[in-house]
Length: 267
Image 1: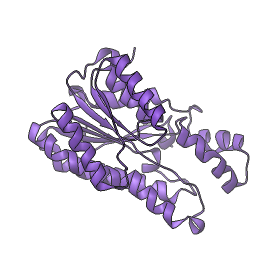
Image 2 (image 1 turned 90 degrees about the vertical axis):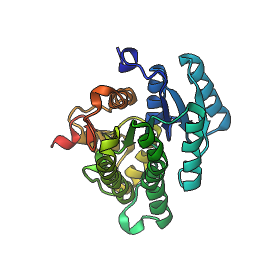
Image 3 (image 1 turned 180 degrees about the vertical axis):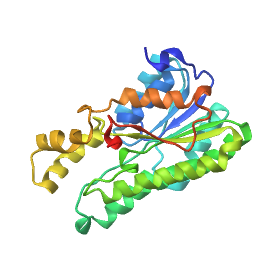
């Protein structure tokens, strides 16, 4: 039985960025199953996104809105937060999940890729938190969850942009948690290991090329080699952890980087 079957978010409002697929979609669906009204966000085919939005709303009987906000544009991020607050009489939960990846040796790392990764994987979280915190302070409640990565704690070669951004997410998480600790707001980062998502699948060919090995060797000897369980983390496991962090039982968990990585960072 999932946490969504046991716990209620009835009357709560959430934003989950990067939620048209992968980890973000699983989190948004989990929150909706628990009764939350959710704003989803992300790029993709407009028809497919509408199908996803409508299916989630019909399945769970809650209000599911879609924001096309571009995570590289602070004004659009602020407008997304304001729209969610207006639609649902406030914003209770913010999940910063949007992220991109690029794999390359540092000397060949394209500057535009570096800038894009920092903008979407790190700066977007800052802009959404900056917009959401005033309302959360006013209401005396908030749950901010940042999707970081095992790469917020350790490094891997050829991922200068991603590792740097995720380490930054860790620092942002801790800093904001300390600032808002007396306002009923918690701020945490979930640090997954390798999860089978479109983002991971997409980086496999580039990693194979960079290392001079086959794609199957990337899966076996690069990705899962890092995880003692030898299994990919599932999106549902991450969604259930995010749900737990929204509950009263998690009110004293703040400023933490929580590993869910099959033992990767234990070594």
